[in-house]
Length: 277
Length: 245
Image (cartoon, rainbow over all chains, first blue to last red; front, top):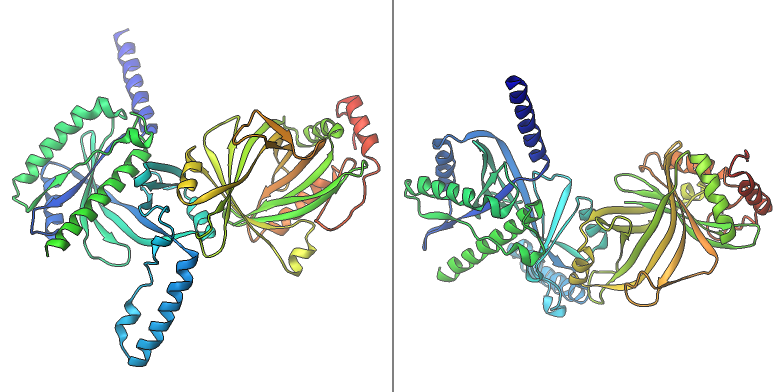
């Protein structure tokens, strides 16, 4: 009887675990905030990776997410800037100045349509390869769609990619946690723009219920990383999910919103640094 | 991408019109056969016939369709996108882009009109997103009817529906038919750019079974009325679809 009860309990927990795999676990996205006057570099990224391994993180494989900023294609601006582009291209061709060809015709004047969003971005996440997420931060909109929505956007020819970034690195297993540490780089170059870390807590998908355990883990992690005396620290800014109409039950839309928030923070940090320099 | 075929249907009541004939080609590409149909009194007969032919029960169809167009400055050319909310299953919504028709001699030889079409499921705030992106509501309509999904040489879907317009913005409970007593029959099937001619053939072959009630053709091509429609409908109604047509 006892054996049967034990078996039933085991089966119950196995089913619970299987069930939990269907439900998305909870993610927390952190980014590296460099100290004033310092910048991110690959040395810091290596140190962070070593730190994960030093606390018994088991390397599992690579991960990659892609984030794309979109900009509107404006009718008036297109004609105006096309004219400017061809005029100056011809002029500089005559003058044999090569740098004009590096100029990317990427900034049509959005003052022609000030009501259009400047912070429209799309994200593809590795845990949801068939989905795509659109976010407009200014209006607190997050949308989950099939990845074919990208084809529709291309066909509409109303928005196009302004800049695309990869978040890529390695994934580590650490008990009930999964850590992903990676770099932020533009898709067309290896220039390091930031360091990002995802902490996934597998057993729970309720934000409130997992808050304490997640915070305790992040505290332990911060303590471990602080011992390495690196010029910066990991930072977490929790967006107001309620403003985006998201519930306490964690979903990939929550992750997408966190990525958008992290990117806004990275851009703000780099703008401050650029202003100082 | 997708492809749509425009068709024309006539019944013996002399009711005719043009429509979309769609069918999916390539990843997300669709061919679609759609035909504007027939007096409302034959709808029940058609549904009995379809149920007998397909061997599946009809699904109720109640779809709120919103057509959005890009704002005046947005995009190098104007664009249009359709958002569909199945009122039986309010989430997810469907985002649909219907492209231009396939042209050329190959397309002319087909009995259907082919259009590029892409669909994507999306969360229910998709309308808010497109408004934020600078799209404006052009028109909206409510499609009410039934749908049949089955496999017969291709994954074919047949919908029989009435098109209704809303008297107030988004008032789905306050609608009037666009054309009184007329319903639309759409025959659709997914295909790829390699096999769309076979799919079109499969669809045409299936549509022949509907011939006693309706004829399908491309727009602008008159096929004449279907003289047998009234008799076929009466026969179907009398024995509940047991008669072999």
